[in-house]
Structures are given as structure tokens and as C-alpha cells.
Length: 268
Image (cartoon, rainbow, N blue to C red; front, side, top):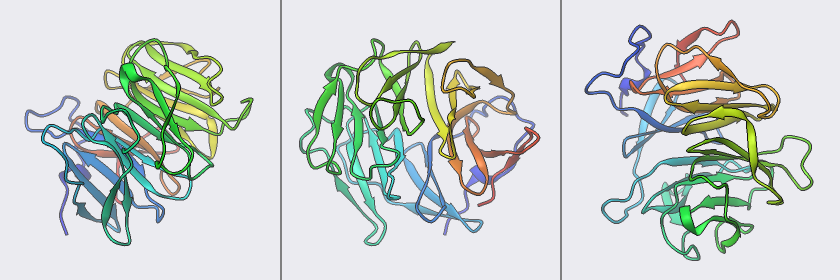
């Protein structure tokens, strides 16, 4: 077992320390444990303890940047030079899902909110790819928004002509499309490079985006946005069934948002 610095409270420190290790990505596994990607290390946190998960063996220079949870609880890892991988918790091993992708340059990925076998991957100039069979076969479905995608999610928010919505955090702001890939348009007037994006599965119209460490919230599916105060610069976010909105910070901390909008250290 390992003890992570990211669970230590540092609420008064607004700026990252020189030796800080920012949280890159967060997700929740099928048992409700928190998975934390920090630098090039992956940890699971449950019951007040943290356990390091060995990452897949890849070529030097591969950079894990994205975590996603499938509708069946499967955990996926992706990043430039890494492609897409699925974690098998039973065997504690990784399976590559990149054989039919044109290259390994995945800058963002997402899993369908309700269809366990449907995955999405964005490969920069190569565009948006979808797999309907758990990553065995990838097919290009769209070029994506005009601006590069940094973060990505699928939501089962009502109102789509198909099965849900795709929200992409780009270098311009948040872009949105029904998952029929009918049209990419601005989700409100939020502007800036979005480094993280997430939503509340219990209330899908609640979408969150991070721009330069500042957390923003939309209560209407991206039509309008408001800024939320946080004690530290935010770098990642996820939703926990038991604790609600969780964020990872530039200081390497994990914080949970309370009912009165206060932020407290996460203790899973």
C-alpha cells in the first residue's frame, strides 16, 4: 500500500508548489473507488488507502492523459503515443484497443454513458473515431470541432436525436454535438482552453469545465456558465456517487464539494 500526498489537506495554498505533482485525470471504478492519474502514475483510492496500478508497457514518450469509465464500469486509459487501453481488474492487466486506430495520437477519449461497448477517441487532425464493439474496430465518424479537443465526454442528457450528447473541451471553449454527429456548435459563450470537462450522471444537464485552473458550471447543458470558487487551481474532475463533485488540483490534492459549496479533502 502507498500513501499519497494528494489526500493531504492544503486548502490554504492557492498556488502550486514548485515540487507539486498535478492531478492529470480522475474517474470512479465499478466499486466506487477513485482512480487518480498523477504524472505518469495511476492510483486507486478506497477505504483511506491508496494502491498503485502498474500502467501498460508502452514506447518511451507515451503520455497518459485521459481516464474514462464505461457504462459497465470498465476503466479506460488513453493519451498521445499510448492509444486506448482497457484495464482488467480481475487479472490486474491492460488490453490494448488500438489495433484499428490510424495511429496512437489520442488526445482525448470518452465512453458512452449507457452503451458499454461504445467508445470515442479524438486523434487531432485524423478526427473523431467511434467503436461500437469495445475497441475491436474503430471507424472515423467526424472531423470533430474546428479547434483541437483537449477533453471529451459523452452524456445521456435528454434532447438528442440519437442516444445522447458529446461535449468537447477545445482550445476555444466547450463545443457540443448530438451523438449522431449532426453538427458541432458552441456550448454557450465560455471562452478559453478547456483542460478538463465532466458532468453529473444523476443530473446530466449539470456540466463542468476547467479553463486555466478555474472551474465553471452550467446547469442547463452548456447554454450558460458561471464560475465556481475553489481554494486551489483545478486540473481534473469526476463525480462520485457518495461524495458528488470531486476535483484534482495543481497542488496534487483531491477535494470534494459540499452542499454549502465548501471544499474539503477527499478521504475515500
